[in-house]
Image (tube, rainbow, N blue to C red; front, side, top):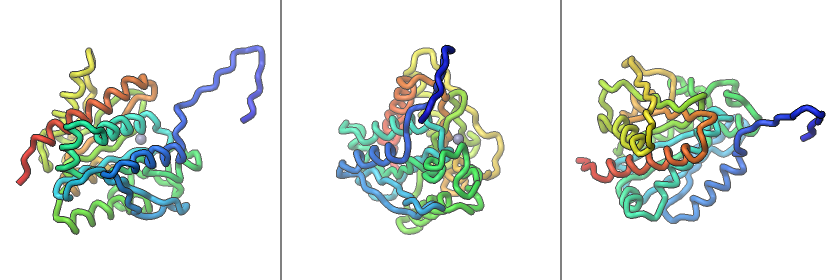
Length: 265
Ligand SMILES: [Zn+2]
């Protein structure tokens, strides 16, 4: 990179570096653990391997899905997702119990072509992937939805929780209409409220969907097709990194607490 300097102050601003190589390294670290494995689910438009990591040693009766980076530069969302996942792979009694009861599937980078090509929002097909969860015209959304649909068909299990991590100008939770019931009614509001309480003075910005119709987003697909209790977590571009870390970690801890107690028939 060449920069032309002058006697004036020169500002160069950027988010943390998190390219495909960094994501790959993080995945390789996770794969060192015996309860983590990877599943190839397809190829992106430009031929990149689309991969899901499986975390857990349970049967697939109750499953969770986590995705991030549908929108390439949404870095803070990725960081929160990372903190969330790192809590679930810990060697704590809570996390070990969780992994015996549940399998969590995570696709940390939904749009690898977009990241590699420096796209702002779209994939290589020129589509905002988070508007493609009804028609599945793009290989990335098609691969993940096929994976989930097949999983349910093959195992007879169900997705009980799903989260999609993004970034915007402040921290916002987009949730589904609280009057509608998925596989574990009340789970998402409970997890958000309990985890937020642990951060002094923090009142979470929760925006439940008021409609009861399926829409084109991942959050809507997770809920309306799979009845997974789901949320989109938008993380502020400027949210301090320690706060992001705390929020991801507390969300995971409170989620595990509730799910570990839950009896499924
Ligand atoms: Zn986004």
